[in-house]
Amino acid sequence: MRAIRFTSFGEPADVLTVENVPAPEPGPGQVLVRVQARPINPSDLFVIRGLYGALPRLPAVPGFEGAGVIVGIGEGVTDRTVGQLVIPSGVSGLWQEYVVVPAAKAIPVPEPIGDRQAATALINPATAWLMLTETLQVESGEWVLQNAANSMVGRHIIRLARRLGFRTINVVRRREVIDDLRALGADEIICEQDENVVARVHALTGGKGVRYALDSVGGVSGARLAASLSIGGTMLVYGAIAGEPLTIHPGMLLFRSASIRGWWLSHWFQNATQEQVQTLFNTLFGLIADGTLNTPIAAEYDLADVREAVIAAERRTRPGKILLVG
Image 1 (cartoon, rainbow, N blue to C red):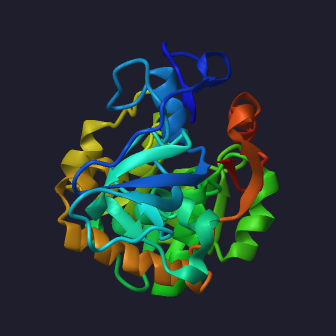
Image 2 (image 1 turned 180 degrees about the vertical axis):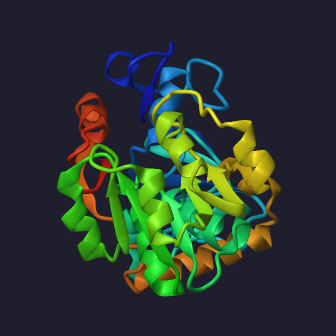
């Protein structure tokens, strides 16, 4: 089978190769999945560069997310069937043609969803949903402040806000995305290069600041969000796009009793029961089916064209996800 591998950390277009390796066989309690589609996410590229929170032993196959069809069943598996479309959850190495997955972690996908939307259901929709509804428990009518609002997670947050009845203040770096986000349902948009973020947030909230903020950037952008928190406000840091330290004045925490905490989807899956995982996916499948969390696909590349695919995935102007197929 074909597998995308890397033997050293570095720039993805430089270190990734396509190799032919033996296909795995399912053991007891496992299923063999023929992976059909895999999105290229920032977390995948951070791993390849050696900059992620958990790194694999080399050589390694990247890929945290994807969807495919069960083509083999190991001994003792009675609740999965050959031909079933599934999402491998809690596993990595999906940038290859076949993977072996514990049967319980192969999440069956309802037929209307399709393999492309299923392939993008695990990371971005789950991140947006869990941060808003489980961790922050945002109440109807409240403001949520976020940076990287034009990212896929940012767009899902805007759509969920419309669905759940709260409002968003969306910080972006480029003016040209403003109209698109307004059409998506963004309530307020701040372009960092044009406005003072903290001053604008305080003007929108009557000087109180926001109870909830989501930082995917870090650095100066994240510090601006932190400075926009209200008394008792909370900011979740779930990304580090800027690759820069998040510098917070201690007085902001001390005198506002504000909280800043990290949030990582991997930890949620590590601690969740299988029942909780299935409940999460049932919710996500419903939101995908009704269009709330639909993920646009910008382009598809065969595994053989992975170098071109990773370059395309890092273009800021792409209109959706880049998928590896085949």
